[in-house]
Amino acid sequence: MRLRYFGSIFLALFLVRSIASAQVPQDTPLIAYTGQNEITAKRSITLKPGFHIPAGKN
Image (cartoon, rainbow, N blue to C red; front, side, top):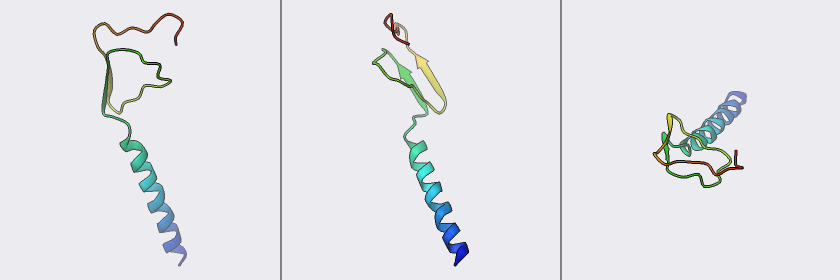
């Protein structure tokens, strides 16, 4: 009974982690800054020619 309970918890945590990581793209090419607080990618972030961030933004 106890093993089944811990197995269920493990499975639930694994599924939540899988769903969350599926939302992050492998590669993120950016042409313009559109006010994102965070830019993420699993593999690479590419800033395309002409990319710039307006003055006063971080």
